[in-house]
Amino acid sequence: LSGHQLREEDMMDMASALTSSTSRLQELCLSDCHLTNDCISIFSERLPAMTNLKTLWLHDNPFDETCAQALLDCLGTNMEMEQLILPLGRGRDMDRIQKELELWLLMNRAGRRLLLSSKATPPYLWAMVLERITKQSRDVSLSSPSFGSGTRSDCGRAKNLDASAIYHLLQQGTLSFGQ
Image (tube, rainbow, N blue to C red; front, side, top):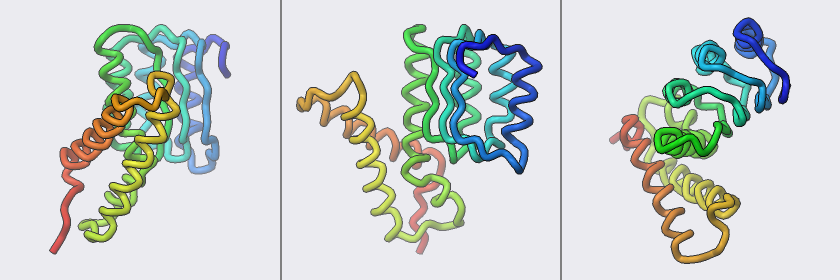
């Protein structure tokens, strides 16, 4: 659907289709679709129920930080989304939102849904989760255009991603080790 102008009605229909039990769509590219704040608001309200959608491209659209924040807020309850690309270069708020989105997505790829599905996470499982977060953050950092020089600062950035992801897990209250 990339490059097609979509209206609010189109976004309502698409959101309904993606939340139906028969939807199997895992990737959706809505770049350069002239998505307005209203379009993104409609779509983001249904994002938590889009459990099959893993990748969503939204770059090159004119929506603002308010809608990007709404997407971020909804991502906190969607544990299946693994990649969400927003418009870049729109200021500090959008950069902050994109960084926080990356942390949620990193935790989703590392298995956040498994941790939250049980009441108390067995201690032996945390070692595996933290290892996956570390591996995912290093994979992200090394494949990112802003990384890749193999410098010491790249390693520092990867460690910061690890720490930030762990902080988000702590903030969610998921780091309970049981008895």
